[in-house]
Image (cartoon, rainbow, N blue to C red; front, side, top):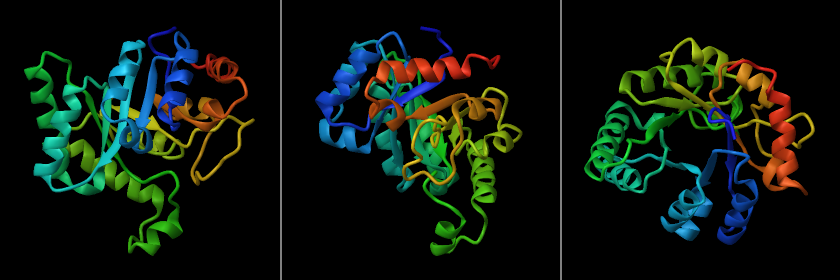
Length: 239
């Protein structure tokens, strides 16, 4: 397994099914994503179980609250030993800074590496019309840029955006920033509920550092073959 394998498999499955799939994918991928559904069903134990299988865990809970609450949640997350976790950029500068500072301190206290804090810009299920419905008249692309600049000012480690905006975001954030893109669909997969999508190869060529891929792998008849097929499609790019 290459250490720069960019695939993050979204384990949006019930607990035992998620672990069974993870077992199948050992040695094929480095990262797995634990989202709200899995974490709220299984609790922190699921992170430990996945780490024991040798995976890096991306905990995608999209924290968004007053800075004090987010600081506390970020500290608890850091103590779990996750590699990355998310906050909403729309929570503002003080909230994002609180998450970054608190998670770094908490990790140091327990002798762990600080997790990367990622700021979620605009969800990939949201389009211009959806933003307008909640009173945001900017286009999705412009709103992503605005929030990415805010995240850069907050000192977080990277952003989550759709692959459609990755190229533009790569010119805004620092050269070592993470650009994590959900909404990644191989040409042979259904688009599902994602509105702003791209293929794995196109996302990487646009500047993405990590690709969050769920159903094309998790719903495949042969998940291992699906991962291998995606890897074969992206191996042409020099990362």
